[in-house]
Image 1 (cartoon, rainbow, N blue to C red):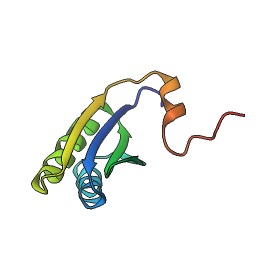
Image 2: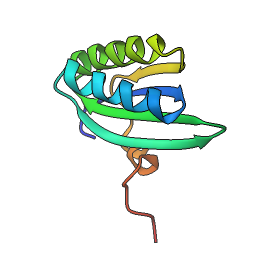
Image 3: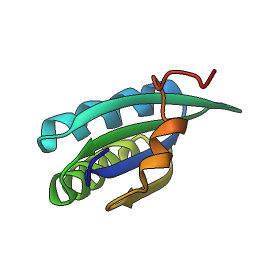
Amino acid sequence: MAQEALGMIETRGLTAAIEAADAMTKAAEVVLVGTEKIGSGLVTVMVRGDVGAVKASVEAGAQSAQRLGELVAEHVIPRPHTDVEKILPGFPAAK
C-alpha cells in the first residue's frame, strides 16, 4: 500500500454502490480497489491513492450515494498499516 490512503464508502444496495464508485473514480485520480458485499444489502466500495485525491473521491462518492438515500458510512485512512492490505479484496489468501 506504500503510503497510499484507503477510502471507503458503505451503501445499502448495489445501485448506490455503483453510483458512488462512478463518482469516486471520476472525481479524483484514484484506483478502485474493489467492493465487498457485507450482507443485509450493505456494500463497501474501496479506493486507493494519495491522501488528497482519496479525500476528494470519498466526498464525491458520499454525496452521490446520499442523493439516492443509501449512504451508510464513509471513511478515509490516510496511511494504513501494510498489514491492512491482507484483508482487502483481491489479496491472495495466506497458505
